[in-house]
Length: 137
Image 1: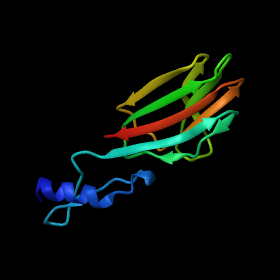
Image 2: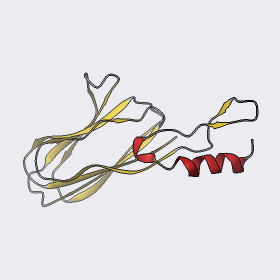
Image 3: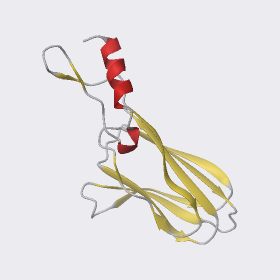
């Protein structure tokens, strides 16, 4: 298998919204992990103005995650929680982020593997929030 074959396999996969890895196959039928798996930006919560929970994403194939949290119209603010789970039932908070100003925060989580990730805004007092995720391996 050549690097060109891996590159073609990556381009064919295309549907990064489902966070599925692209696995190339060598000439003996064995899987070869791609050189880079990248998750295109996914908006988890968009222009939220109340306590909210994002959909959960299966991110077990990515071990580098970056969350962009943008807030505006904030006086008192809210707490944004990045949470992880192995079963979509029991959730643990990785990072609680109190937000009390208009700003963009970047939260990087590297060299960790999580099965499911979601974001919660709670408690909410005021402001408008957008949370975007990108990831890679």
